[in-house]
Length: 435
Image (cartoon, rainbow, N blue to C red; front, side, top):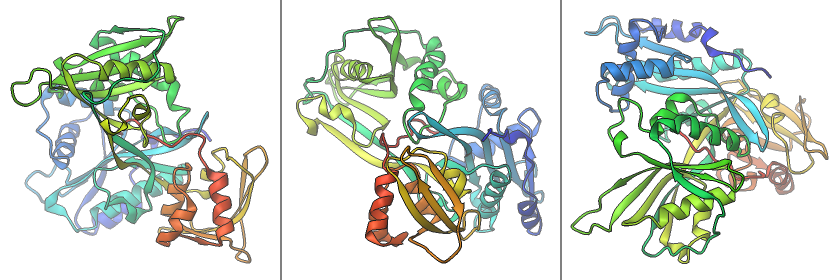
């Protein structure tokens, strides 16, 4: 299915009517218009940030110009042109299995001012976004979350996890591969292009991944006006024996506590590697860096490979967190978008209180791993699943037999086991950026 540009989509009329009855206006915001500054201030306030400077406003305008911005306005307030709630969306892609991508309705910047809580604003905004996405033909919506208790009420559920990794370098003697290529420092100004090039090659091979964008890579490089540590950012690139740049490590260094000058902390802002060789070279560089006692990295695989590359695996600690939340809007569109690991013949009943994905579906996977999904009658139902659980199952990072313990999935054990076998991911789902 072709990706539909969300800039062409109006504010949801039903949500506008609901909010209007409460004295609120629900409107599109133009990134090039006068209202953008107030929109950005409201977003920053919602995420407990500082007031944006003029340079930060222009940087954000450049990054958000391609997005559909929505604000909720209380015209009776002291600042009638400052939204009391915000959301933005844009067309993206989701890697659903190695080499396969599906259109993704990406959602971000969801805020509600603490002065306007419990007035149904978030419900109207998020339901409006889902109606807009479904009407535009998107089968899947997604977001990353700061609070895990909010988005389940709209049918979102975690589909890809990530680890925050800390390595105690004084215990982590390197025993991993010795890469044959070379490492070089590269200028910070070149990082957006370099990081993008490597990330584009790897993101289509890892389920759960989405493409980055210029603003994201400029932030990683410390080149945005709001970046306080921009001058600390350093980077090395790995080139293989053919001279191809296969990996990039972006990091900062901070002094440790006390008078021990050898106890610096190396914070990894990005480590993207096209292949095991580049990954080993970059991790070895970080762990063996002079005067560094700890290496920290976020958004790493759930079981980080680096733990197998050091002599003491307990020198590596990984804290798991849910990261990529998905919402299925079209069961047939979502389930036929990916490739499967084994044949399957099962009838699913999907419970969706909001109605988008509700129904009974015959799911058949052939020997080549391709699925057909058709609406079915109520005569046979093998597995019942909530729409949230279906989102978690979609990429193969969660097992139906395990979700059954929560009541989110029910069915005979053999049918659930067949789901697990077919849905098994060729690579563990991972989202390695925020969006």
